[in-house]
Length: 387
Image 1: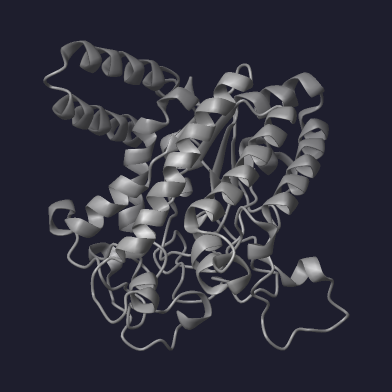
Image 2: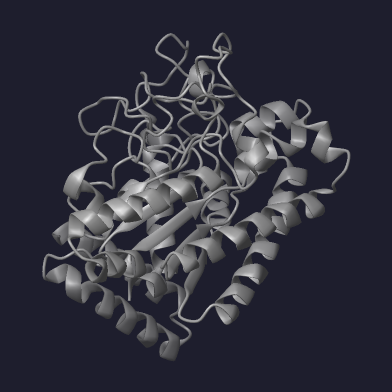
């Protein structure tokens, strides 16, 4: 728990530096952080559970048994994770959600719901439903099926990533299991209402669907497509609320145009972030923030926080040296320009030996070192969800 206290104190110090010209606000933040630290000092997690939904930046192994091409249950994925074993996380080590769970005082990670550890009392601390290549739209999750597995012996759901709609169905199933394990509905309801629900989605909808799918980009402008995604977000939050969730954190879109794969595919031979894609992300983020504000007014008792990942990741890309990194254009895996999922494998030539200086692990996903920086930034934003 000393690590938790130290990390929160560091973050409070950063706020102090930023707010030095605004003493009243500084003392308010200091008081908030002190309140957050109190239960952690007693050796208890700050919240009863963490429940995760979304895409590959949060997937902790749900795609392992599926036939989608978006998988990460093989080397070199996981080489820096405890045990040095690939778990299905799209990273060399820990995800932002893993680091967040540790920071909140948990001794274990919420299990991947479709994995072998999602049983018994393991479920009382939460569960992870996220699936690589999933998104706000159901069509995003069904785009990529692994070639050679088009057999009738496999049901269609098994071949796809897990759509957000299906993740919600699994969550309902999970609630029933937790009620049985907890022994009574009062205890289980307190887990759902007090637990933090985290959602990360949208990047796959744009990069793996809209930009390459004429069904969408010839019909919708980026802003109109963003409206479709925000509509799905609204329905998802309302459904979670009806199921008892009261604390929800949703990640904004990152600077999509700065992902190495995006620069390679959409940068027209350039070596800089693709401004058009970053602009689309900002449009979506503004709509997301506005909608989140409306939902909070509409749904009594709902704590809904938009976690801005755009700015902290852009800061890493724009100023890697100032943040302890030396490479932000290329990823560690392979050439660092296009490899992700199956293309990032043990035989990929050029994979770096030490990923700590790289902002990106593969061409889409941040390294563990970058995830640590992002998790610290998001923690401060999420204070409202911890009380």
